[in-house]
Image (tube, rainbow, N blue to C red; front, top):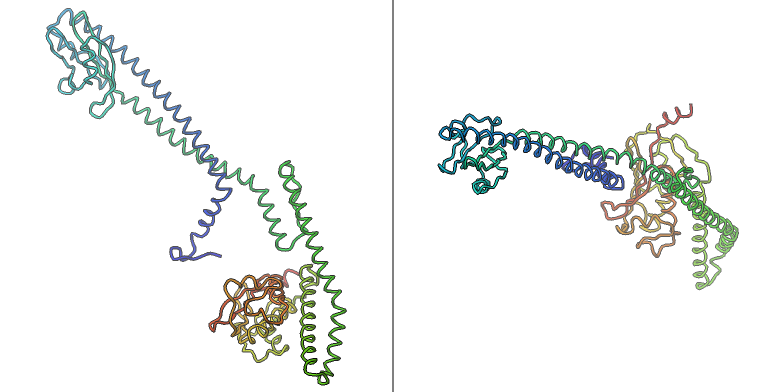
Length: 482
């Protein structure tokens, strides 16, 4: 059934919400564990890969640029040493990498000669590198120029009392590293996704035995005490299956023993109860001959014997229901007509009756169970709430409902589940003479018909007992047996 909310009036997102809730359980934790493990492994591997690749590319780039800068410095030493007056032109024509720049400083003239003075001069060089080289200490340093990464080298040329600076771009290395970084990020995402998929697949394998246990447990809870888990090849699962089956065997044995005990006790009580009822009926004919005091005692005995007899009959019926005894005698009937006839036959014809079913609305059900449900609900209203005020029968395409209302004090919210337990009594019926089994029998018959019973509060403040049963199409049932 889809739950409609204000934000999702059509229940469109209900399947997604259900899956989201399912992912919060063991399956979700397994998927999360695999995903996080894959993510951590991928991130660690990517960091190591990126760091080693970056170091290698930068070292290769620096090695190549250093070799070229040394060659250019040697060339300047030769050319400037021969013709120092042409130092500016010589630096301008020096060959550097595309995007690279060169600067020559002559100590004697205290002059700087830049390869492209309109774009790059000594002022664009890192101050630390410039100072270090001018102190006749060669060095290197990375910096940014025009928003691009560069690496600069400073070489001291003592033969001409000069210092040579050359800057070369790292954009190609940066571009390559960006590509590698993007690839690694996508790799991390893919590996994490693959880990999640692997976790989902593994969770199916891990949870499959648990689903089998849950399925068998559900069947057992529904009354199928003969259902057992199949043998497992895995030693741990085999141990689980064996322990579970042994537990079910013990539970089944105990339930059967208790059910048999209740049935045997009820049967053994039938004979003395029958004798007592017969004796009470005989004495009832001479009741007027008794004194007032003896008549009061006789009335108490007669009332308790009838109550005892009803309790024993109810116990016998519950024992048969628990044991699944008796074959279901299904017939095609009109539920509204059946309920109305049951009420009239048992003296409740004065109770108002309504229905939304048509006269030709037929369904397949066991009439005996319906009669027991209706009679118990009407007797419950008579014994505990002053009598039923209304009976109604409704239905839709899938279910049908029998509703009995009274004008009593109603059932407290805290007692609405408990009153369908065996020997349970509501606050309003503590002093009544019922056996406390009538509503439990109603619930058992409702379950046998594929439905359930519950209680609400009607518009007058009284109780409104509702029994739902599964509708069975006569035509479909007939096709199943063809």
